[in-house]
Length: 220
Image (cartoon, rainbow, N blue to C red; front, side, top):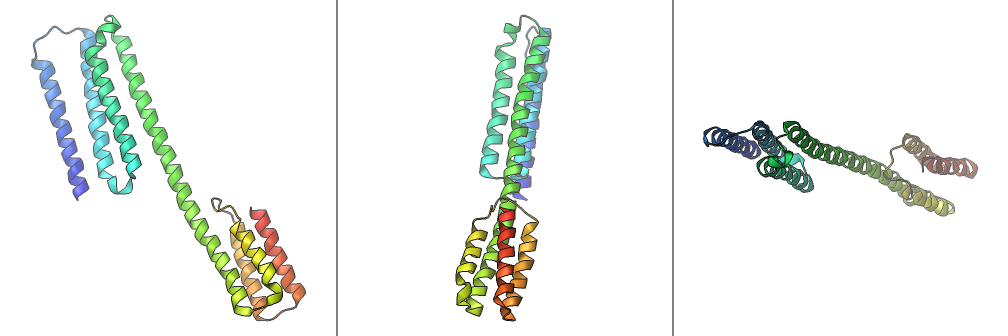
């Protein structure tokens, strides 16, 4: 509710600033040329872009990191200031060329929009990778825990070294990569556990451990 109110206040302030800008432009007596109208239009665009962007950030603040808010706010503020400076102090440099002023403003807006898009896209990829790594880490840690349980539950000293190597192999897997092989390894560890419980022959257990090691190497 608080975030909604803050974004609503931001929009209200934006509307007030927008109206004040329009009123100032219309009622301040001065001679205006074609590029002045173009400059005024792009200042309004910058104000809308800025306040709408800030309202969006505030409305989704709980879902966004501090870095995202800071970078987004910085880019929006830069665009607003650059647009105002460009359209209030520099139009005379365009030598009455409205087209040059239009293209410059469009270029500025495109650059800022592209920066925001790239940043948001990269941030999404980082978040997705973080979530994937977390899931894979939990899954592999569970496999490591189950190998430890095999050592502790059955006290088969002749397999301590092999199980330690198995644990080390899983620990050295790529925790940032998801793999369908994990489910196969999980099944094979279940089978190995049953073999320990049934006290099967060494050759059977050795074969199962070797098979799991091969799967781990395949997974990487």
